Image (cartoon, rainbow, N blue to C red; front, side, top):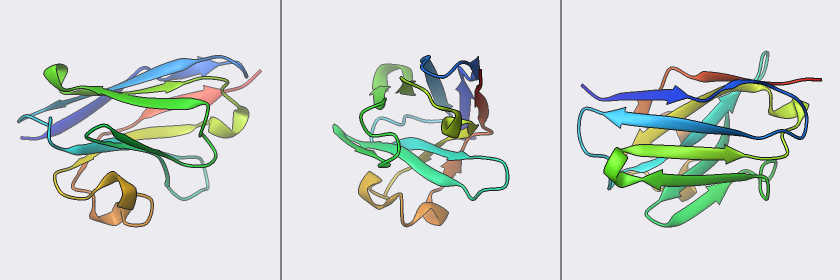
Length: 125
């Protein structure tokens, strides 16, 4: 059974940093496309970042502040979030798919096969 489990969320102040982790289990994910979405209260889920092999993709709102990476030996994908802002407050979801290229994730998120349960990130002073 495939599972994605996120961790690392929390309450931080504006300007602080957090690193989210997502551990995948059930099979090897080294060839999967993986990434992150988020959903703020009252808003639709939105794309944050994706990684396909060594290629990385970011939403404009996080570009230059967030960095996605992966450790295939640990079946883990990370999201390093720096200079956090109140608008970054949301539940962050890890996602994975065997075939959908990360470049397509922003437009075709409904086709992504696997999702985690989410981790809350709150940025507030």
